[in-house]
Image (cartoon, rainbow, N blue to C red):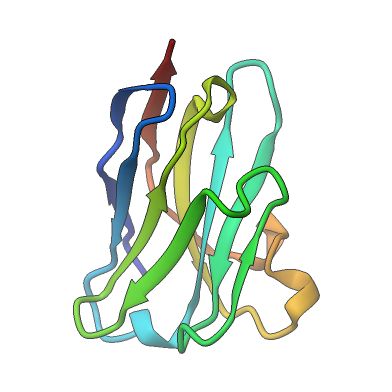
Length: 126
């Protein structure tokens, strides 16, 4: 069992930045790929970014490429999502997830992840 705890959400103006953290206490963190997903009001959950267990590969949704950066620190059992140049449409509840993802084509699929955090709200205002 992997427990994930997100933090770092909040209210920010358009063009601003936030950094989300996903803490995963336990020795198994480094063996899992990590992903970030989000759900905006009235919309389906969507993929945002993912990183392989080693941190050597990263994946992004087209909507956040060039603005968001995913990273991880296995020594701290923590994954991060640095969000810059935030837009109104980035407003959502952001969830981190962990799973034994092996194939590149599976990183953006929610079904690839076994464990999920409770979510953290990100609100971008004009």
